[in-house]
Image 1 (cartoon, rainbow, N blue to C red):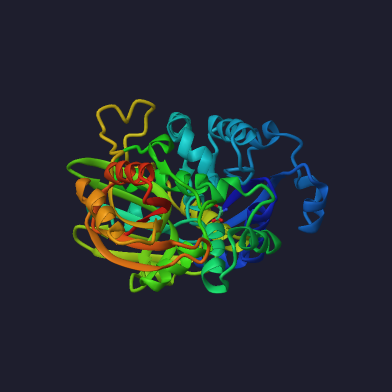
Image 2 (cartoon, rainbow, N blue to C red):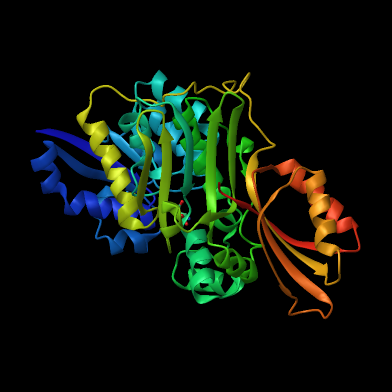
Length: 427
Ligand code: HSE
């Protein structure tokens, strides 16, 4: 039976989960995959992590060179995260001809061309299923399962922390701050939650998924990004009353006009399959020309779900003699000539505080009409905060982002109305 040596860099949550799966299921993989996957080396500076997993001292490498030069290591798993050390270590492994499996979305999103160039030059594999949506096999699906399709769009809830926070705010009617604290208490959100709540994590993933789906490199810098830090419980409740759930949605679209990629809080109709994705769960909804709509759902983070994706990549690499690389032009200059759209179209939700007096509604509708903004539905109630004021909540037909920005500026410049919030609505 073929023996394949593995090295794991970083034994945090994901590295630890990968180690557990590899060691506990070694016999299962021998039986079902006809391959013996052996953890030969680990690189980890925290001795507690090494002790907690019961790893023998002889297995622990002192530095990346020891791993890269070890003839018993065939596959190097990078679970360090971040850029500096991770990039140096991954390149060292690839340059030594070792196949790399990584869960690092920031690294792959920003440097996929450099990493792939090194991998090809040294006939090494480079696999990254765990970089996007944890245990949900979305990358293999895009590369293998739906490659017969031209994919026109993908929409996803691809960050579990923000989905947990928005679900808490919806179901328990708590504020953003309270929901964030709960997410931190349960270990979903980091002490510094910026990467998740500001939408960076989802934007890295969207750039990778869109590159694969649209066969065109989609750099992270092209992703329009807005996080959830300004979302209010009031908007969530008003959206709920109108039949919507608020999600941090990642949207990628490809058409004759160009590619649009965006991450922002979005109201989704309650009867859309993505509306039922709650808590820390993730899902991706893909539309292809032959297959129609498909949706993948599952855990986007955690030791074993992410370890599941990593070990699946290891098994692929260990059982195939040919390396499989990304299916888009993956060079530094690959985006030359590709059109990325900034002024996308969407439905919009607006909440306004207005003077509660005759004729105001007509004046607001007239301003919106001047920017070709047409209202689908509207609710009005007396303001709980200010006497003589009313709260107006409206949802628009499809409108261009720029028209909404201009209309909001115009409304705010009048004495009649103050626009309190603007959120997109998925159509
Ligand atoms: N922090 C991410 C999330 C998991 O909350 O989904 C890793 O990308």
